[in-house]
Image: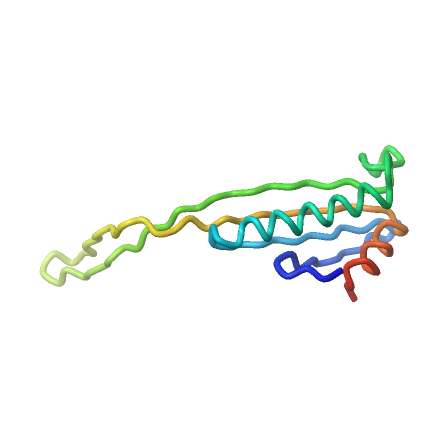
Length: 122
């Protein structure tokens, strides 16, 4: 199953556990597609490892953290005022919102291997 927006980085601990982390930063038009990918990933994890989500240190197979942020940016025109020896700043109009989502999965070796196979990670 391929993913277009979520690109996972993998890190493995010496104890066989792993962390899979992805971040997507998109314009509002792409947010539904990003959300759909998150749903696909989490639905797969819940279906393949049912009832086994929770803190790994308590014996569970996998867990996740999901965060989102919407950022508004506005350009600034910066001009150097030679006579005054300082910058003059003129704020511009705010642009479109930028949406950033991070999904971090942690799992035991079995979960991480199954995840790599399912989503084609090397």
